[in-house]
Image (cartoon, rainbow, N blue to C red; front, top):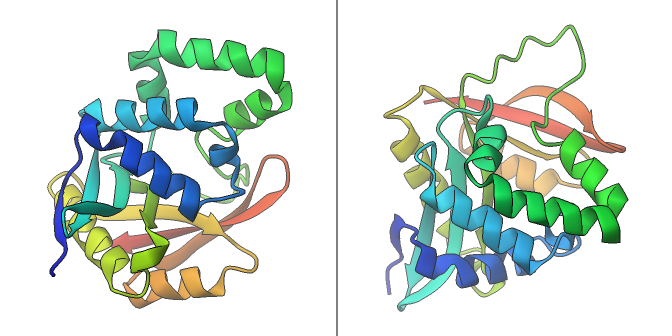
Length: 201
């Protein structure tokens, strides 16, 4: 059966979070817990500054993507719009995992601190794309990414993303094959080397 790509709604959040947890097991954002992920993706879906798309196969959600229409200031706007709920999550982290809170704050914009890099953030940013492991290799990620680019093209002519620099050849090759080019590398706090890739739409 074919895969349907559609905009996400709040009823999809549980499925989105489950796919995120499976696809990004061991990643920092996943370690913040299901409540944080629920809040993050719900805020993203309800935002007017980005889009979350879902991939459905046989009436089951098998993948999703989350992309802002403009990278610059997106996370800050998301937090301000949902200040009380994110504030409560921050207080919980402060008392249970203060190091995680520091890391979250320092990486909120994923910007390079290299003065030689001219990055104004005036592009859409793909924050997350994930496919259920049972459907990997079926082209679902490619469909999601293409649909995301089509959606954001109404707002901008560039889309960017960040991905791990090391031990990540297959993922980087996937993006390169779809037209993404290396923009610059940077180190996210505390010591995670990353690539920022970018594509002209």
